[in-house]
Amino acid sequence: MLKNIIQEYFKKGQEKENEFVSLINKSFIVKKASQEKDFKEHWDIEVNQSFKIDIKGIKKDWRGGELNENIHWIEIRGVKDEGWLFGGKADYIAFETVDYWILVNRLILINFISDVCKHKQRTLDPKDALYKLYTRKGRQDVLTKVKTIDLMFLSEKIIKKV
Image (cartoon, rainbow, N blue to C red; front, side):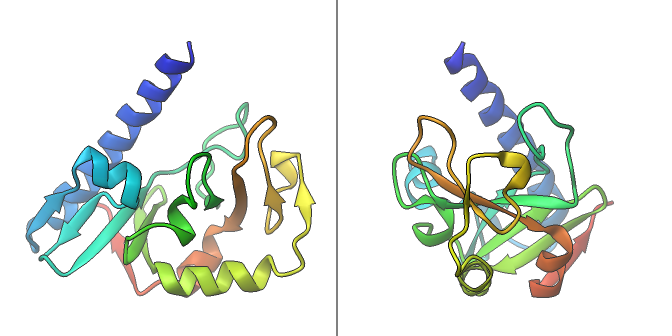
């Protein structure tokens, strides 16, 4: 059952990556990451051999919730490694909304998350994870939720979907 869930998440991730690539590959040379680079270095595509992007689709507010374009989950610490924010090799993170992709420099995002989570408030409730450190039951990961509007203010580029 867990294997099926992981495969479904992976499949959805691949669909979002393909959607983003098809939007930008008319103007840029795009190379997809190998599965090993994706998992270990936390990036999905390299653009013009000059910068790497990790692509994040719209997520649910919590497991039983609906997809919500107004928030995004940030992985501060992964289950098996440092996670994609602090341990990743991507230069940019592309966050999806219904109509746009928001490109945020990963280092700027690190500074923002470090600032807004500096009081280190913790929660075990995903519904209460906005700018708080959330760890899933039985896991070692650390996540937080951010408002999409904040990501828009941090962004270097916003790409309209066609």
